[in-house]
Length: 146
Image 1 (tube, rainbow, N blue to C red):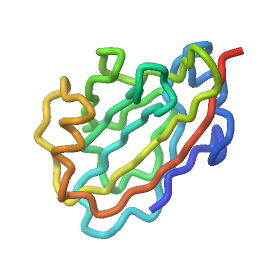
Image 2: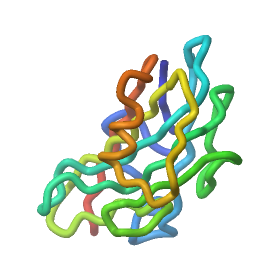
Image 3: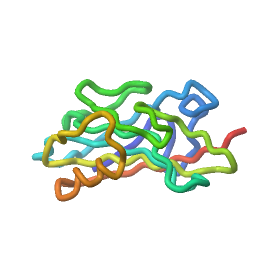
Image 4: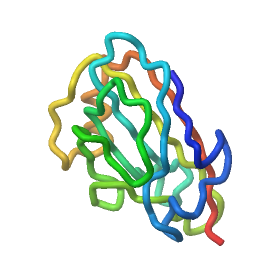
């Protein structure tokens, strides 16, 4: 399984447009090689370098397993967004207060649909995914405010 973006390369700089200093819209993502039998996809975006500990920027689940791209600034039909560390749903772009941070975009192929409310936080999403992950892929980007 692969996760890439036409906006930035693995370990590359995330363009300002996709951060708090730009349009704060989610970057375009491309998903490939989803395993047969996958019932849904889940996406988690987080920052392990935040001063307060792991910061969750975006949670989306119940994405169609035939999905091959997520255009910038969109949530594919059927996707359910969870609660980020900012206590809101939706994409919360990179906004590091102190230095360059790493941002991990992780997609998971699941063997089920998840029955979770939009208020779900990352820990509850991960608990619901436990035992249902068929495969996963990761893309890491970097950002530092200028």
